[in-house]
Each structure stands twice: as structure tokens, then as C-alpha cells.
Image 1 (cartoon, each protein chain N blue to C red):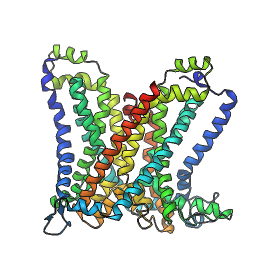
Image 2 (cartoon, chains in turn brown, orange):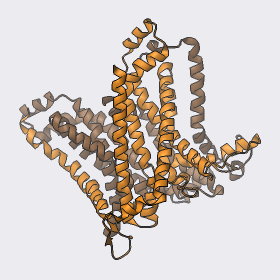
Image 3 (cartoon, helix red, strand yellow):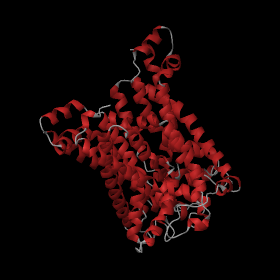
Image 4 (cartoon, helix red, strand yellow):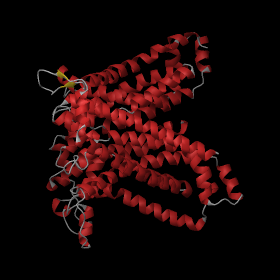
Length: 280
Length: 291
């Protein structure tokens, strides 16, 4: 850490900065905190002027949303979709990323640019043909189509990200493996892959986040049977104020697992976010 | 060179095969559909050539949606960049404890966007939302956050900024941590002011990260859908209807998939042109700063 190098202002400024950051952080978190409070309130406490801060908390709405409103089914759908996406996306992404890191730079460069371009496609442009094809193939409201779509929109980023990690693994290892009689697959599987585990963790984390949070494809490709959590909560009493406590409870439930995962794995998350930026 | 170098292309096969099948083929199909007058569910489709494009370009609603997209894009990306840069510098300067702040500040970005937007919607709801209830307590008449064309745009920009500023902050903060501190120390010893250090050492070193965040954010704003869908649905009227929202309305509400595909292709062209311009401009500024 380089703290001392950057006390540009000096001690006195330090406290001001600290207080300002506390204030910004608090304001930033007010919507989250308020939603947590709302989910623990009876509607009578939720609609008051001035806003009620002290009230008798209740977990009733959390219980209701999960046990009486099908949210368990939506959670199951979300888990099936996001875990399958990770299970397909990370392995095939790592194959491609490995090969990309082992071919000459002048061939890898254009491939990376193409991947970056694909990443920028407006998703809406893909959602339309998906919807049309899905309708013809009678695959709307089934898991495979949504999973395929998510794997595909995820793939450019996954390959891009893992490519950086494979580049850090020296080529000498491939050559040593070759001399020991490994073929390409064995060298990859036995020698390289175990070293790429941190990269795979980051890639898996991002695929998971993306597929758990994804809304557009989930909205147009799912139906009553396969609805995921974001689609369910969006269509669930956003308008009706009396349903607030219930929707807030649902929303908090959707948010919690992600927040826990993210706080535990923040280090990996930051590594993934900055992979594109720092390497240029 | 390893002897099986030549068989490496096999490793590309699953990934690129899938991309071709699931991304490029549908994309080509969308371009193909954009030449037809095609209502999903109708038995026939008629070839109209560039008719859909011509029709769209003559439409006030399309230009309105492009204007709205630009206002929202510039507003939110500008806000995100300024606040994100401020926060990144603050964290960098704070040193100790920055980790705790960065985790807390980052939270809104990991929350499912639909959920985060619902939180904001509840905050901004007329009368009973936290913002209005607080203002009314002090007898201040609040604006109609989601119901007036002007404030609805402001609300969308604020929502986008709330969700994505943490991302900008994190990328810039990580880039700051990679800076060469010796150079800054030397400048300080030579008596350079904070501003000059920022302007002549920190900013040039951050250019790759800045280009990266601005381009990524801009292309995301153009396809950004969940926040507007949940917060305003494109309303009131078409006040917050971006190109993406309009495409959604065309394709999935009116089922005019031919026209919607044409609009998707137009979006792609606009985004590509915009990104190209931005990259060139920023790179030029960067080069000029160097001399």
C-alpha cells in the first residue's frame, strides 16, 4: 500500500475527507436500508408523513412472499438457469482462452477485437430473432433457450477475462509437458488448468452474477413455468402501494445471496472488473 | 514451439461454434427479417427491401427516442464519471479504511438491477415514498419524480448513476493503485501543486482506464433496458423512451418484428459510430497532452 505517498493534503484534510466519505456512503446506501426497513414494516407504518423510523418489526412478509407466493419456484428457476450457464460458459470459455493465449499475438489480436465487438451488440437486437426462432421451435418458456442465450452473451467476456490469466502461465510448462509425452488435451487438463483456477473463479463469479441478474432475455424467453426471480419481482405489485411490504421482502430476498457472495469474493470481483481496463 | 501447436484450433471449436450458432446466426436472421414487413403470428411476410428503414427514419418517434437516449446517456455517463473519479481519488487519498468504504460504496452495483430500481421507485413514489414524505414533512412541495417528462428523465439518470457509479469508481480506483508513486513523490518535492500533479501525472496515467470505462458505460447505456422498464416503462408518454425501449415496444408489444429488427440494426450502427468517435477523440486528446 502506498498511503504515505499520497497524503497530498495533509493530516487536517484527512478528517474532512473521512467525514465526507461517510456521508456519501450513507446517502448511497439509504435506498437499500429503506427497503430493508419497509420489508419489516406493516403497511400502516410504511405510508406515513413524516417517514416512520421506529416501529414494531415483523418477518411476516418475508415468510409470505416465499411460502405463499411461489418465490421458491422462481428461485429454483433462477438457480437452474444461472448454474447451468456457469457450468457451460466457464469450461468452453477456458478452452478458447487457453488456445488464444498460445497462438501467435498477431492472430490473437484480431480475434480479441472481434470478441470485444460482439460484446457491444445491443442485446435487444438479439432478443428479437431469439424470440421469433423460439416461437417457431416452440421453445419459449423452456430452460435450454434462455441458458443458451445467456452463455452466448457471456462468452466474449469470459474468454477475454480468462485469456489474461492464461497469458500469465508460462509457455515453458506446455513445452515441458509436450516433452513428457502429453498431447494438447493432456497438457491443458493436467498441467495448465490447475494453475488457472483463480481465473476460473473470477469467470464463474461473473457468469453467475450476469445470469442471476439478467432481465431482458429472461423476460422475453420465459413464461409462467420458467420465470426467474428478476422477472417475477418486476411483475409483482410495483404499482400497488399496499403490496410494498411484500415486494420489498421479495426484493431483499433476491438481493441477499448476491450481496453475501460479493462481500466474500470482492477481491476476485475487482480483478475481473479491471481486467479490461488495466491491461488496456 | 510445441509440436501440437497446430491442433490448438480444436480448443476454439466449442466456444466459437456456440457463438456462431447462438449469436451470429440470430444476428444474420435479424438483419434478414429487417427487410420484411412481418407481423409475428401473421401467416405471410412481405419483402419490403429498405422500406422498414425508410419508414423508421421518417418517424418523429424514432428521432425522439434517439434524442432521449443521448440525453440519458450523456447525463448519466457524465455524472458517473465525475462522481466516480471524485470517489476514486478520495479513496486513494484516504488510504487506510478505503477497503471498507469501497465495499460499501460498491453494493448498489451488485444488487440485481431490477431490484435496485424497485428500491429507487419506492423512494421516489409520489407522497408515500421516502423522498416525498421527507420533503412534505418540511412543507416542501416535491416535484412529480416519475410523472413529469423532465423529472422522469432526471430520475432515470439518477437511477443509472446510482447503479453504475460504483463500477466507474472501482475501475478508476484500481488504476490509481497501479500508479507509479515515485513520480508523484518527485513532483511533490519539486513543489508541484495537487492540481498539477492530478492534471499532468495522474490523468495521463489513467487514460486507458478512462477510455475503457467511458466506452463500456456508453455502450451499456445504449442497450440499457431493465432500469427504464421498471422505473418508468418509457413514460410518461414517450418522455423516457430510449431506442432500446422503443425496439422492445415494437418487437414484443406490437409484434412488428421486421420493423423492430430494422431498429435494432440502426442501434448497432449508431453505437458503433459513437464508440469509434469517442475512442478517436480521447486518444487524440491523450496524444496532445503528451507533448
